Image (cartoon, rainbow over all chains, first blue to last red; front, side):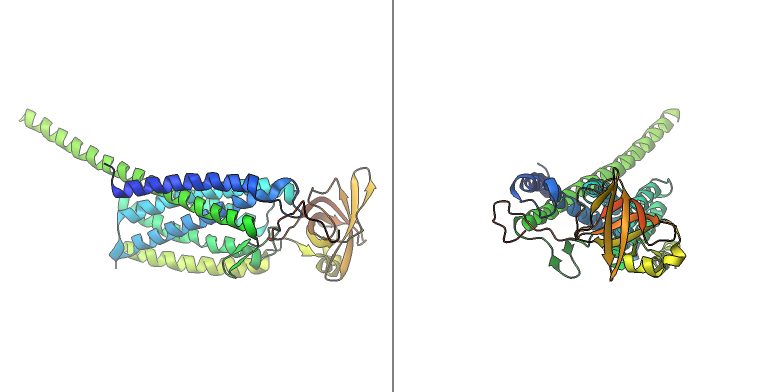
Length: 244
Length: 137
């Protein structure tokens, strides 16, 4: 009988799958074209902004977990594993954001890539967190590794608000966000807005599922290591007894 | 005070400093493009250097100037610059939309020679109703 938590994670996974399929179906077949966008190009609206959003959520979670790890009263290796799992999913979604953005940029703007402030800071975000994941793999005492990783996660997070506000701080080729969180305004209506909202929810659920699974994997790896160590010690002891 | 706690404080100071630097330093440093009126005002300094120029494509100005050249005017802040672009502009290109062109002024004139056009679009997406009768076109 699987635990309640594991059943909840499975449920979230199925909801994410159904949600993403529904988003694709609504986005491709139900929603209308947008004025001025030829050949259904606007349909990337239902996946590209949600992917960018998930990357932000993932890095936000890595930031919070790292903060909780560094705070002496809440210090726990579980926060370290959560930060690592979340950042890893974040890197996947940042990569997807860059790819879908590039696919959208070529037919609309006319270029696959340009060193516009938003694109540049997003590329920086990708590299920063790749660096963070690399830092996590630098061997050392687990506590020391967790500590320096947590500090790196805090530093890397500085780029997240910079990415979001880059379009309003600097001159950019990229348009302002369609979902304006600070001004609480949505620049899209009707079935297009609902499909986009579903995209946000589904990809967030997918993020939750992926992070939970990745976290579990990390916990199992630690458990296996501990058991392996205990086993090795027991073996050495047994050898000792034979000799005596 | 433990080492890790000290490290955490150092980390925070770095975060704050980085944030401040990124915002302050880059606000003035990042100029992705110059607008049409700015480019004309800085015409003398710009010479024939390559930069990105932004303006809205003037209606009725777009025409073919050669077998592989499209000519159009862009306007911003009351200033107009004529652009000769090598190659065809992207699919989304049309009068009334803002564009960023990459190129340089020709000689000492106010004409601009570009080899790349990037079309800007807004964050607003309006549903098209292909079956609806149009009031005006």
